[in-house]
Length: 383
Image (cartoon, rainbow, N blue to C red; front, side, top):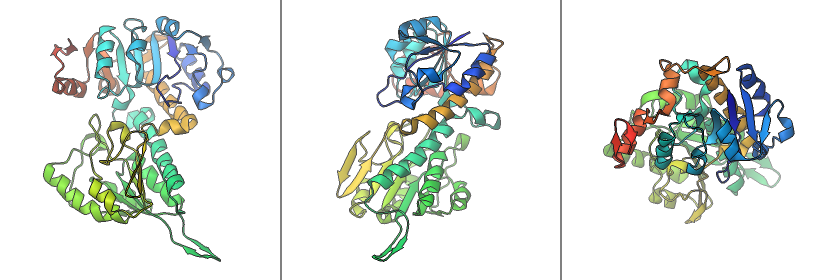
């Protein structure tokens, strides 16, 4: 069984799908690891760091020789056309963003597994790439805010007077939000948090932050929040207006899986903030939580800086790669037995995470989105 590790070609993507110390894990599964030269360089892993792998200089040849392909970001259409027919692809495939690539996967009859679809069940925790990468994102978002904010986070008592701590608001108390709360607290900020899931209160308060309260219960499947009704969105705006206005740093992480990020921070809220305030919109990749967010740009509006980085984990590429690689290798142990593919479609982890197989789209949520986008489908396939 030959497993390919190509170099990521997406702009600003520095992560790699397999780190050196996990190569022996694949070898124990009976796999031969083929790696494109320089694949780990973005995460500061040199080719010399990798032992017991075969390096391939030409990425097209790499794809053509491999039965399993491990990636971080979704492959481009040009990459897909060089895959072996019936190959297995594993990565963060973002099907809601790349519907044209789904069609290409179907045409090549690629069996693809989207790591973001791994179910949040106990047995799959070690494969949960969304959580591992969100941990990185929440941490880095706060550091970016601290770098952009022209005030210090902690309270300091000096001979020149006392500096009061910065007020931080974290919107969304999922994995990224909780890590942002913890990081902001470690830096000495006064932290408040908001989440529409009532169950988040205990976690928020356990980290030393105060909860912004609102009378909405919006628990959804898999521990995520559901989409709000129009009336609930109005209540949310009213409750958040004062909290945003008083914050000097806002870290926004709210998202709904497979859908555009909810617009939570209005232009009016931004205009009520003090000059010098900073908003880091960690949901920019899926459209952003702030109405003014522009992907990967710093927008200045009325003295408030709004920054929406679309790939926060890649800014901490070394540890992000380590965590993601472990997720992928753990998932592979479900698919490969004694060097051969042995896919058990009755396994919930496998059945929930498959995107395409044998020319069909297997993920129900993706089917629904594509249908809503007016792409014609026949018997679950694109046409």
